[in-house]
Length: 419
Ligand code: IMP
Image (tube, rainbow, N blue to C red; front, side):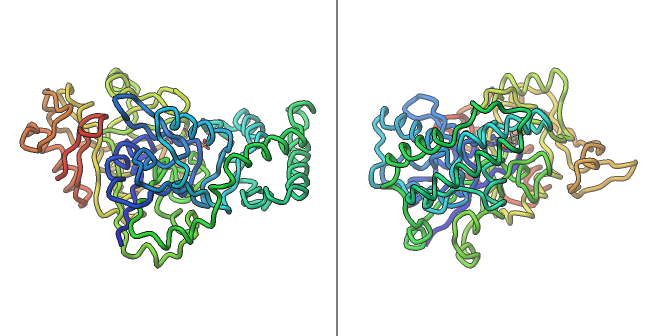
């Protein structure tokens, strides 16, 4: 029995898609267990850039089963579009997609509500309706795939929710924007096309020999251990594994946990970011690293790597090993900075503060390392890595006391080194 959990060890966009794609053929199943279409997992498939928002990246391998478990919130319209997009390039999912009957669905009123909420408090969400769908789930007003079968009940749930949203947002929503009848009809229509894939997913998982769990977003966006309230609405760390899959905690005792991180740091949306570079260096990272959101296209905020944050992620997730991506983005830099601690009110601190007011005030304490100023892009052997790049890698490993087991050296499947 093999179990591997691959998590984002920063604020998302670490390159998990490529790593999961690479590892997937070793597993029977790949599982998305939290988040929804706010994720954007990018892979290069047949020389073309492909972004998956809902389906696990493992679907690209025809012998791998793809599972969307109960912690994911599913936008059926987007799911079908994604399935069609794959069919067009010859990837068929007929007998190998499993959707949890307990998964909640994202509906148009969630998106309408999110627009209004974002106008009031700017988190910089992806506007995919993710937050409100989880809000409704925890307010016990959600609609799950298993609830669609009973059409009368479905209609009354939708009607209640639409009225609830209208009542809540009376000033911002005109009557014509939301119609219970329309939401109901659309949901039934979409359900017809996916219903054969809807099953009790935890049973499917328990019976599988080897499973890869694909985290979405990053651990610093986790609703509980991230930079609250500038976070996503799910447990995007290992904390979400049991509730997100329906599997007991015991199941994960013999799992391995890998954290994927970039050689620098990015964040999309608002929230504290102690090592952010509002300078030409930041611009350069954005340009070389092509740091634009794969879901929203927004420019990502860029900065130096933050090991205080990375250590927090390693500890809270029990990370066994790390995968470093996008080292080549640093190829042209003469000097590199690594944040090893924070300074707060003149004192050095090494922990990651839980509250954003403190995190906004800390100043990063940097160690400077020399750059290698030669191309590492596409390097496939550690022997071909420049010494200064190896020093940079070892420095991080020692500081966070966790091995880096893989380097991704470019976007394609072949561009990696196993250490
Ligand atoms: P939401 O997940 O759409 O509610 O957005 C909440 C915050 O998480 C915003 O700052 C988003 O930019 C961020 N976020 C959500 N999904 C991702 C992702 O896949 N990568 C990076 N940031 C994300």
